[in-house]
Length: 410
Ligand SMILES: *Cc1c(COP(=O)(O)O)cnc(C)c1O
Image 1 (cartoon, rainbow, N blue to C red):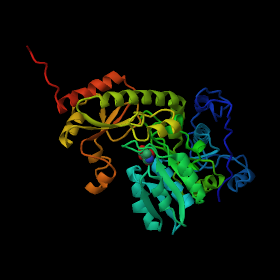
Image 2 (cartoon, rainbow, N blue to C red; image 1 turned 45 degrees about the vertical axis):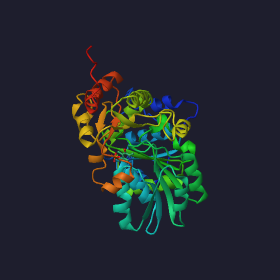
Image 3 (tube, protein in one colour; image 1 turned 90 degrees about the horizontal axis):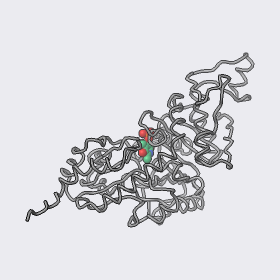
Image 4 (tube, helix red, strand yellow; image 1 turned 45 degrees about the horizontal axis):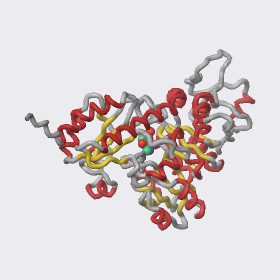
């Protein structure tokens, strides 16, 4: 069923930044400098014989954009190369990517182990949808290796984690979990949305499969929804191409073209998001209205040392709690004029979110507590504005939480 995969011509002689700008471009006879956009649902053949050959895959080439489109293919090859893996299948969204991994690797009666603090829809995919198809999921503490080991059983097919986690920034040990998975003949699937390959390359640490929501940092400017699965495992890749061809969770060529342009600046943007994140985390930590800051780049973060070994920098998501209750947290949100009030992240525009009443609002109070999300918690996605402007915007709300004593007039 699945079509032959052409491995990307990943060249280890180029630095990842150069690969992200150059790799995989197909230049047409027009000599265009930017990547061409092939906005075409189908492709024509030179003869009946060629059409027949393309359909049975004797001959590689374009057929129909559900499963073969040149712009989507360039995005796949470039992202695979940046992740340091031979195969990538682009998907219509991050959730389509995770669903496709399930469809490719699981059947009725199988079991998966998933870290507890995954993206809300990912948790729901396992508990509400995959469960209906006879797949069991056990949720474990991301940072507790013993609980991962204890959850693995004879029908376990893969371990799934997101690191760093959102919103708390806990860090999972990719190398140790890959080793554990392989000891039990399972695969390790890593959601690399928060770091992107510019900061973390899970394949090099032993992961078998990496999933992406391209909607976040790969785009980086909040324009398009998309996703991808990257793998070093040919069997997984073939199964994914089969899912793509038959079930059709395809990426639009237009969105692929936007993501290609996004990849060109990914490394620079992630460095800037990380520099802003580190500075704001340090500033918040010293702020009298702030109770606690959750950011892997801070020396007092419980997995700081691990984060420093498996990531190149600590990213743009900074979560903190304030000395107050929900009302005070909301007033920090409502006092902002620059920060966008939205649950999205990974944009050039900084955003502020109150997780307890938005991203985690549908959870029961007990589930929320288990996820570590409290009513006085705020999540910042640090964008590309000047960090001083972000500080000034936050200060307006934070100074009301616990007004500093006015200087006494002698
Ligand atoms: C947004 C997100 C997803 C889902 O991606 P969509 O493109 O919105 O479908 C998956 N995982 C993480 C960590 C995300 O942030």
